Structure formats: C-alpha cells, structure tokens
Length: 486
Image 1 (spheres, helix red, strand yellow):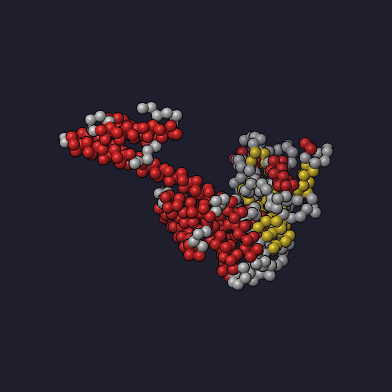
Image 2 (cartoon, rainbow, N blue to C red):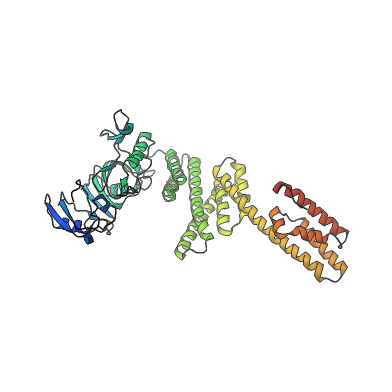
C-alpha cells in the first residue's frame, strides 16, 4: 500500500480483522513475504484490530505481508474471548484461593507494544519527553496480590493455572481496565500504573481513545504463600489470627467486596469453634463479631430484593435464604450475646427486612446506642431508621387526619339532631387534638378549612377545641415553615 510497515497479531477468524488478511495469513509459512491484491469486500472490518492497519479507502489494494510467527493458544472459554498459553508451569502446588501471589506482569497491545509493566518505575531525569519517562527496573520486587480478593482478573486467571516459578500468557478480546492502585500502599507503583494508562492509550484512526482490546497479559509467578488453614497450621498465632482475619474481612466489606468478606468471616467462625481453653472470652468475642457481620451483610443483601415486586423466583429464593441465615446468626447471638450492639443492630436490620418494622428496629438501635454510642454502624442505621419511621408515622397521621376530616363533614351534614351533631363534632375534634399533624399534612388535607367551619354553631367546647388546635398548628408550623397563614 506504500505506507509505513505495521506489526499486528490477531486470531484467525476474528471478526475485528479484515477477512482478506486472515485468508492471506492462512496460506503462508513462517518468514514468507508475499503480495496480495484484495478487493474492498475483503477489507470491511471496522474493529480495533483493523484500525491499526492502513485504510484501503474502499478500493482494490495491494498488500505486502510477512508472516513472522504463529502461536497455538488454548481457548479456555471456548468462544475465542480468552486464550491462554503456559510456557512454564512451574513447581509445587497450584495456588489456592486466598493465597498470596507475588507476580510480575506485562500487558502488550495487538501491535506488540508494551502497554504496562509491573516493573515500571517513573524516571524524572532531565532530557526525557515532558520530564516523565517509564523504565523497567529488573530488580524491582514483584507486587503481592491475594487470589479472589484484590488480584486483577486476567492475572488471577493466569495464576490459577501456574505454579511457583511458572510463566504464562493470556490474550483477551477485551481486558478490564488496568488496576488503578497496586496493593501494599506503594505510591510509586500506583503512579506508574496510572501513568501507563495515560501514556499508552490506544488510538483509532479518528484519534479517539479505545479500550484495551486484543491485548496479551504475560505473568511470571515468582512466589506463592498459601492461606492460613486454621489452628492446625504451623503459622497459627492464636487469637491474633482471628483478629487479623476479621479485620481483613471488614476491610473487604468497606470496599464493597461482600463475597470475599463473607469468606473471611466464615473462616473466623469456623476457627473459633475449634478453639477451647485459654482466651475463651476473646475467642467468643471475635466469633460474635464475625457472626454479627455475616448476618448484617446477608440481611442488607436480601432487604432490597424482598422489597421489589418484579424479581424472578430464583432471585427471591436466594434472598430468602440469605435472610434465613441472617436470622440463624441473630438467634445464636441473642442466645449467647443478647446485649451486644452487633446483636441488636442485626435484629433491627432483620425487623426492617422482614416486616418494615421501623418502630421495633428503632427500639433495638436505641438500646445498642446506649451500649456503644460511638459505633459507626449503629449510628448510620439509626439515622436511616429514624427517617423511615418518621415517614411511616407521617403516612399514618395523614390517613388519620383525612378520616377525621371526612367524618367531620358527615357529622355536620348528615345528622338532623343538633345535640347529636354537636357531640359527634366534639368527639372528633378531641381525636384530632391528640393527633400529631405536620405542615405537609395540613396543606394536603386542608384540615384547617374544616376546623374553621366547625368553630361556629357546634357549641362552646367545639369552639374551644378548634381554637386550641388551630393555635397549636400555627405554633408548630413556625418550626416547619416561616409562617402559617391563618
């Protein structure tokens, strides 16, 4: 085509590559150079891969192609979306879930250029473009990840297929975004990953940024540390191990990783059940805290689903199982730690999830607040329940006011006996006198209009009650509105 040479790797049959290029590659041997004349109908692909090649502009064109190499991949997903190749499997056992894996990795684009390397460091020496440059440091320590928790998905897929010392590659049709922050709090590593994302954005022919498509991840698994297996593990440190495991679980929950957090919490409960003798109180405290967190997560997960009316039977059944397990955890806590803030907080959540019992939940949370006034979860849930309880009370108050208003209208118009009519009006006004009424209810129900109507012609008691109620509404409205117009 008379343009600069371009290197690109692709999977035979990929719809993102021109059909003609694929047909040509199939007919070639390694190292062969050949010219191919291609009709526009064979060059119609518009995907990320095709955008790396020269644009034929819809005319017949001649392409000089050199086949550099071909590689056989294992199609692990059986749909061409995820291809894997293991160069060295390594030695020892495959890493189990929750293992710590120390792994160096690189990401290569479809043109073979390196998008990011875990060995990258930022070079601020003068003379570099823009004052910044990324260079690979071969002596840099491998970052550590925990399988199933903070390991980037492509890395996790590769690590599960490697042993210690193993090397493998994974090619994905679409990679998830590069991790924004590498674990361990290494500010330089984090900045390096983010800088790679900015400096190595793929560009299409129209200059627009594209996501990481048709990229290859290469991983070198340097070391594997298996997860703690429990009290029988030689690395067991007693109660401290329970504390560390629960702390890690709470960190995961704060990040929104519920499934991973639940795994850690269940491990705490299981380990605590195996421990007897010394430090029994501390062990029981950790087990109770773990059970409370398990129940809390499950109840929080189930509540919004149970409130919906358009979920499938499978989803609804799963939510009910979650809530039942939360109830089981709460029952255990109420038997062994009835006054614990975690127990009362969990019971409050279950009351809301099961029956929208905000009054009962409010009572439980007030008791929890007395024991732990600074507990973050108790305070947050108490605020939410107070809001919902006010809404419920407002709805009940509004319904009661509407009923009294309509009854007043009937009492004034339907009874022909003046004494009976006056007695009925007074009784209704006495009910209204003890009813809490907000400004919004006053405006929506227009109860003030009805009260003014009842002031005359229904006796001194009715007149007194009307004046008293109107005065109260006026005084209370000053806290809710600048002024209530009489």
